[in-house]
Each structure stands twice: as C-alpha cells, then as structure tokens.
Length: 309
Image (cartoon, rainbow, N blue to C red; front, side, top):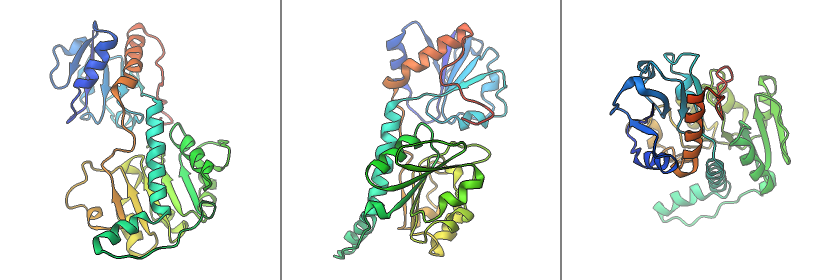
C-alpha cells in the first residue's frame, strides 16, 4: 500500500527522505507520478487540486501537510467516511510566536515608518507608547493563538483574546462567542488574526471589524487569506480608519503582481512564511497516522469536520 504526497509547485524530496528515514518499507508516490491509484490508502496534501482525491478508490485517510486543514475540508468530493488529520509541531508554534512578536514590535516601535524614512534620507524620531498602553487583541486562542497571546502578555502588552469557546490564559482578558466580539474589539490598537478558517470565520476581517478598533490601529493576519475582505481593508486604509496592515496570507497566492496591496506603503507583505512545517519534525506523525489508518485505528490530531479544525 502506498502513501501519496500532493503539493503542487513544491519540492517534496525532503519529505520523501524524512519518511523513508523512519521506515524505508513505506511505498511513496508523489503526485502526479502515481504508480497505481488502487494502492493509495493515505494521502498527505497541501493546496491539492479540488476533486483530485475522489480518484483513489481505497483511500482511508488524508493528512494536511501543515497545521491548517481548510483546504481539505473545502473539498466537497472528499467523502465523510475519509478521516482528516493535521500535523502539530512545537516548531510551528515557536515560529508563529516569533513572527507575531516581530510584527508587533515593528508596529509598536515605529520601525515601519523608520524604514520608509530611510528611502527619503529623513531623520525624524516618533514617539511610541509603553507596552502597557498598547491594547493587542488576538483572534483565535488555539494551539497557535494561545501561546502567542501569553507571550505578548508576558512582555507587558495589554492583551485580550477572542475565541469560539471560553478560554483562560494567564495575563490575558478573554472573550468568547459572537455576543462578546464587539467588547473584545473596543480600544484595540493591534488586531491579530490566528483563527482557523471555517464558514463562520471566512471574511471576518471586514469593515464592521475595522470600524470598531482604534483609528490608529493595525491588522496582522497570519491565519488564512480568506479571513480578510480585501476591498474592505483598502477602503479602511484609504479612509484613515486603519493605520496599516501586516499580511502573511492572501486569498490568492502568490499575490498577483497587479494586486492593490503591492502599491501601498502601509501594507507590509510577507510571502506566507510565518510558520513553516519542517519535514524532520513531523515525519514521525505522518508515519504514525499512516500506520494507524491502515490498521483501522483512531488518527492522532484528527480534524473535527463540524468545527472545521
């Protein structure tokens, strides 16, 4: 039986090597070079072509190549009988904490402005508040959001967090559910999105949200591009409703050359690099779930289809 990797435009040789270092007896196919579709029982995917997976009659389970599984959940051709799982790694958490901290510090200490001033050879200091005077809001308090919020609180920022269900985090004021969303947003200076992508959270970064945070506010999105309504962000920036946006994810990737975000010095763009899965760290999880799927056992890090994560 074979394990299939599907990740268009990615070099998957390091993944193949990491899997075979653990178990050289595992037969591996890398799409589109598939020896026998009937032998495929487990697939590992990232941004796979929709409806591709229904072509494997003996498929038992599918794993995301990363922490998110929205690209799998959105594939309507994937039968409910096929289990979905994802990978979990301390490195993914650490990388996200580093990325968000870097973004927050750049915004807080006006480094974005100073970098712009370099191009103009302009010497102009700017005042900045203390961390305690800066309200940072984290949307999503799961495996990435919770430690990120906790780290910011430990550094002295005034941190609030919002999630689907109630959470308790030391040093963080938490809110839950749609009925507490507006209270969470009040006086927020930096709004960070680390939500899972579900039908309920798609488009959540919209004009209604932007109107409710501080007019000097910034948006940081390192979750999924579909969380953000691009046109609403452009309007909010043009209307001085927001000061800027720091974006790592986009509805279309790579971001098209002609996209309006490229032309704005108050939009910081990074190419989906906030938290990158490292093969050597998660290959063991993939091998374990491959063997569990073949044995009919419950998968580790199984995705709840109803919740969307």
